[in-house]
Image (cartoon, rainbow, N blue to C red):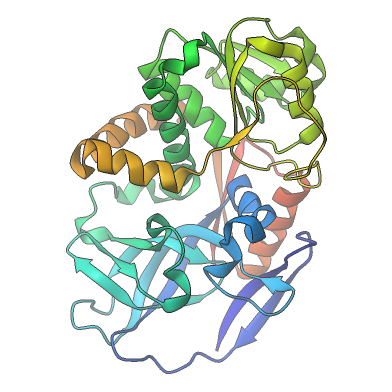
Length: 358
């Protein structure tokens, strides 16, 4: 038997734990036992945007109930694949569950992809698993940090990479919402290192202003109710909040000085994400879908050069975040459900990174 946390797809603060028997493995299949995963606002975005971007399809649920993807570590519990041995550890996209069956393909010393039929239509980035024994990004002492920050960091890295290729659309300021989020901090870190001429302005809730200022990632930090105080200078914006009212206010404050508007996540559940709120001043907000940008960047730069650039920026970011976020390790899927609901309600502490051991 194996347990899974399911989330109600259109009421994501409702969760349940389902216990089901494990089926026999087919030829070439591998059973992974989930060891650990991080739970962040990024996972809430997967649920909020699950229908629009197919996130519910990676690990199918039942009817109105779905399984939210997580990033974490797993160990091979059973294997019917000649090249994958029992006891081997991997890192990648996992369900909020105790087990996952995969069909490895494109197996190399460094990793493999899951060729399960229901996953093939999705971005290949999400279907890849790293084999830790030959993974240059793996640091046994920093597994928690990798789960908490790794996927979010790469999104921030790719956003900066995109803006730099576009010469920041002629803007001198970068404005980000949900500045306390880990992806926003990653973007600010990479921007400071690789585009130091760009001024970083973070917008956050009043209760998070002090935390964001202490982090030191931004040149200026404003509470959401002070958005009208944004300097009316050439700017680009990245919206991680998914709050339609806030985005409208930001566009209104900057007017024609806003040169590009990017939308990425949805940390403010129920605040208008994906809804039509009428004409918005300035440029049309454009969705940034990180997997597509990753594929394009790897194609353009080559996998080796891209990997080296990510690794260098990752090392800088890890040094900058040391001590900024406390890791809270929690046992059991009940704890996972509770942590997910807290994140979905916006009551999770941004200074705490949650790691679950199912």
